[in-house]
Image 1 (cartoon, helix red, strand yellow):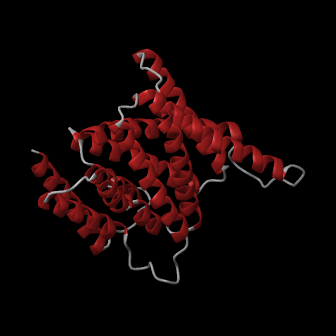
Image 2: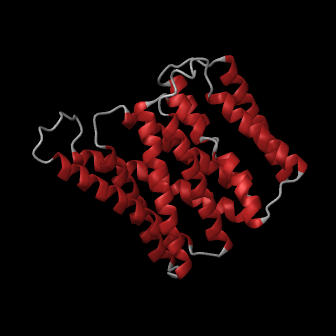
Image 3: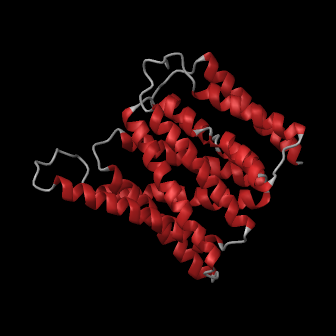
Length: 288
């Protein structure tokens, strides 16, 4: 079941990545969009918490830490897509599992057996291949810094999510604190920029703040669903393996760039796709 939940999380986050990439090319306020995204997550989480009558324990406050990590990671990824190459940012944001598997070993002594480790390597190599392109050189690494920052922050969010399962934190109250924290962070950033720009001539924008916030709420549906799936996956599987499978959300973004944006698949990208699917099949065999 951990593999099924991981794949479902990958699909959800892949759809989120597509929406982030598309909106990064639009004339809108990034902070308003992400504030709406996290607000929807908080709304769904508190609704589910009340319906399921889950207890609001102290352990649920780990969600605040998750919110801070997620705030920084999402902001960095969105900024990377806006100022740099989508393929390069996708490579970097697809590699948190490398950090996660190492830290999980140090913190919780989580060890992978030989076949699990081999499957993990196959998936990571597939991710690298699938988003690597020949036009990425030392001279055009725009967005690399944002991508690296997002990598470590997404890893921190994954590790925090695993921590909630170890201490049996209630799912929806934890997610509420996570999304409420993100909402506050992006909301304050939005107000700060608004105050800073007050008195200046506003740049023309095709998206109003209301429209941007509402579309952010649409993006938030994919985000909260992905978080529900990934926490269930962490509760059942090993941290590094779950993180590696979820990182395959980059394949969803790749299919979007191929069939919607009409980007061509290079031989390396085709090889990466094949390796990623082989890695998934190996995970299935290991899990069965």
